[in-house]
Length: 360
Image (cartoon, rainbow, N blue to C red; front, side, top):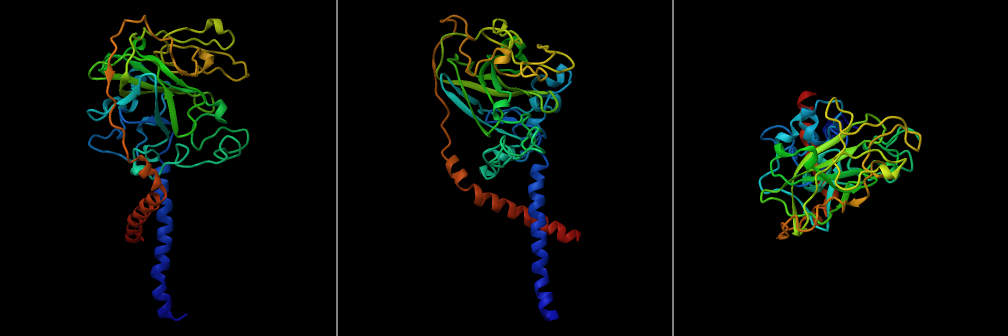
């Protein structure tokens, strides 16, 4: 090859290396921000992150766990000011009475349909499909370790702790209390896949300005024993119920004696904080592992809609609340997932190539 040929090929080869490095780096910029899991949906607080005036497609502010904090910090995730960034006016998590709703469990907004036109979504919440998750070493360091990619505090799906949504019939976040925030739906064996569908009981209508909801998760071992309490603005839609929700009381550990389980409306689990805990557990469960007050039968929570949380019929006024129009572009977004990802990575690669070219 002549010197002239080498010189003519060198820029293309150099660009190829830059493109490869830049593509890897652009992927790392998203993955490097992953942590645990949050339930992403319209109506959630800090959906855009916790920087004023910034709509961050790559935010993970909501996924930071709560552990050993003062109540003023763990209550509704104030530790990083998530509760100070409400959803846009008119945005609600809609709860169809006697129906169901779906959210996205993900480690970062980037891996949901709420970012990048849904081009980075996958079966699981870290943007990957993980064909062997929970069966092979996929996501694990070794056969006896917990899954860390994504970081969902479990060894397999059957051991996933369970997650919940609770509702308070007040419109102002500052008016929510432990006893007016009632768990109304439980989803066993989650978090696991990205899409998670929760069943709704016959809830009564919310005030005109909506209700306040919260998503909760208590990890079942596999790392730091933390918890989640994320805020949402929500409203009940459809033909609403005629019975008001009863005041909630703390759940109790009852794995070894179901007669001890609390019946009726229950509070969220507040645990392993410096103050404000409503649950205390010690010792080992029936499997021989340290007790963890998770959202399942061990704490008296049944799977699905919680139909035992109501006062008598007639304690609320029935009505019909029109649901918001459903988006029609979700299928189109998912159809272009692969091409959109390549396009996004290519744009990022060119930007990073320009930076690398300047530096190098």
